[in-house]
Length: 284
Image (cartoon, rainbow, N blue to C red; front, side, top):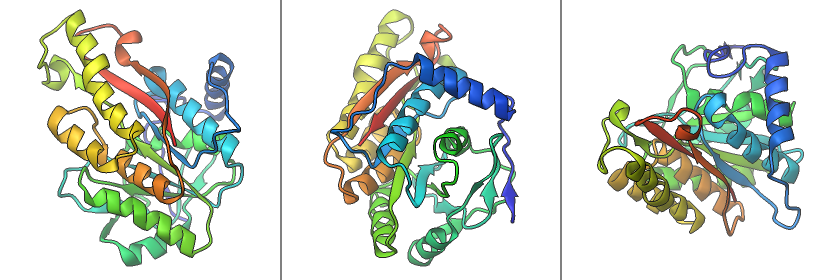
């Protein structure tokens, strides 16, 4: 079996099994987020910075999904930094390494999707790091030890909304019970990112939090996948808008009727400065 290396372990998150478990269990112990049995979930949105910055948020979302869907057949995770006109990518076979053990690809689902959509196949031995997906995998392995995944790169284009629908339809046709996850960070603000429309200082931070990030969060909460793409194009408030839109679209096709904001924060809370990034965890 071809295995894609965990290229960010030891830097973005712990490089050992015991380190990952300890950190995940620390996140769980210190979380105030509780599962709500009255609100079944089918998917979510997670941030993808290093665990120091946003790992607790990703952990909360994936834990909520695991409590609502205990034994899914597969998890489809949308991510990857792509241009609007880029092709979709998919990992069709093999496994992805994590310190907690490899996560296998759900090859039948990936193969069926590849027959129906314009994918550019991403080789399992690819040495290009992809933080959008890799940093989620130890959480996925921890909460669903034997789950298989289909990683899909979704460009920030309306076609990603259609891809979400396609994923849900194919899974349903195959009789598979799937969970969907979209990976995106929010506004990248400050001189480090070349984006300072509100200058610098406290007022800029407040604008990024309360206005710019809030706009794209509201688009997700209003269950409008296409508006996520539009928001990101106009306001630079989602770095992987296609992934978020695809996940929400798939979730809606799977029966989701509302979204809930689980947690929101920025990197400024961990590392104050003039440059910072917004992070949101959402379930639907």
